[in-house]
Image 1: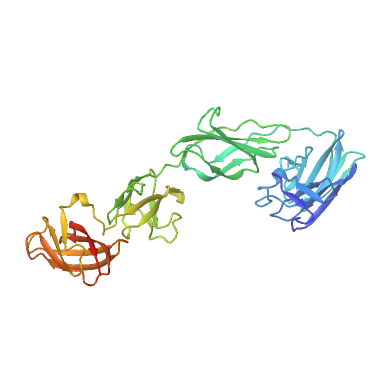
Image 2: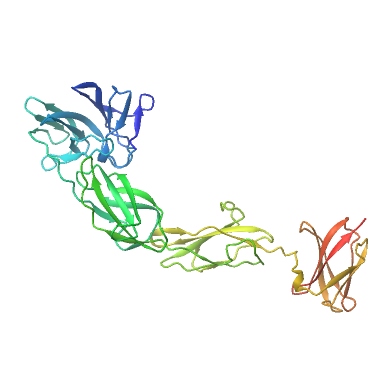
Length: 432
């Protein structure tokens, strides 16, 4: 939408000229000669409020970019209609149709005066004459008896280039502007005939615009551009095609939290065509801040981060292509296994006696072998290990230990073999 300017929010800059309508003193125009600001304004209430009519004089609606400074604005009645002239740091421009930021300013006199700065413009209604004072090219005059609405030229697309790839997300579109156009329209579609699945971006200025593309991955798309002003459209440009960014898919672990995975967890993802390298971020937080792994420049399709047990993690892969173009995957989630827990269905039956216990306890299990060394862990109901000791089974199928240091409560007793395999487990009650 057109930026509005009021008496309390008017931009800071040098007001280089003011034009008052000779038929309505409240209808005024004013210009700014600064770079990087909106250059031309129109007001219908004597300047209390105003709106931009810079149109295609600006690169962007807010005045930023490569648009010229405007030194002067003047008007001349031609065949009963006003023609407006702007003297800019890049030459002379004119229009007969004022339409906010859709205003199309066309160049005048470039073949004789070129694009030298035009410092001042004086018009004379008596003989329909325009005088222009330039910086470096003298003073010029023109007799204006007619003002033709020229057909809009056809723009030429430039980027994304034809048959390019890895296009998506926030993408810069570049084209040669259509002569006589105030703004431009870009269409993007997966249909080469643009009869369906068409997304239009309108009100684009001066040949360059970053657009947020919401498109499917690994899909061929087509784009074209045309110019427009208050009365007409240009023909559509030639059509360029591009392939959208490929998707990055994880191989392992699956994106789920109902299954846990034993450490170490090897992260594996699918190869992306034309990727030069990858980066991986792993964090305990969905936003991926405070990462436990942030590795760049990977050429393999795998990474092994150092992880804590019984913890949920989030991870993302970024593929880096030529010219440092990046593609980010979705954020995936997995959970590491609680290594102090036991899957009881995989173990032989185990018993503890006495249970409840006060001091000495005997664990009986057919998995225990006399003379073998075992690691015995006692874990409370929060999953915290409260006791760990290495002990030897003195008799077949039995292992004794003391719980004299434990507080009253319920615990899980876990016995592991030398290869860290859980061979026995049982629930223990301690009373004091």
